[in-house]
Image (cartoon, rainbow, N blue to C red; front, side, top):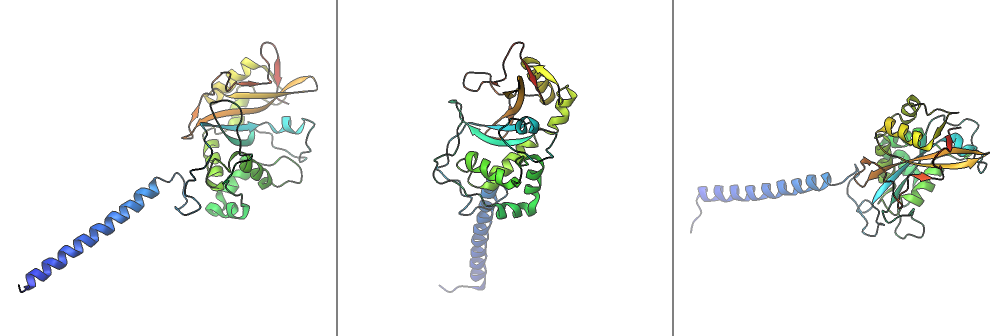
Length: 260
């Protein structure tokens, strides 16, 4: 059968339509798949989620009071330390109880500071320097980040960037922590009963925290404040149970807790 000009034109039109549809489908697939990534990095061999990452149920975002840490008698700090609550670490946890970490874990993600330093043109490291400084003298900030990531992040996150970016995002959910606590009377040199202290933090932040204290020179000192985040990185009330008690060595009743 001879092909007319019309048949040739029709055949070319059909081939073009099929090719265009295939390209559109491929483009849609790429766009869709990229929207599934929880972070800004492109999908490659390094960011593919590792099926052997350790399981966890929720996060502790832990803040510490620098003077409590530096007057504990166990460390030597810089002469000038922040007068505000700073991040201690981001700790994935299980509801089965007890702290979990990456000790002995396999397939852990590496810490690479030069790479982290250039991530997002240095904007992430700039944030970390602000809310996550190292208090120990002669130790750069990234030494502490490395320690926290290797212990609490390297077996739970595919990359260091995801761990630190997640931490920064959660910190942003509790803006101005120190000024908010000061507005409730939680200031350096003040002492509070445990129940009163917890209620003031709840009023300041809107969420039930977990508190940790330690004994020093006859006084009970507030050391760390834990905030609970679910796996979607949203704040929720830390449960007051035997598995995740809200009180670590802070005492109850008439025992006062001091912020040095």
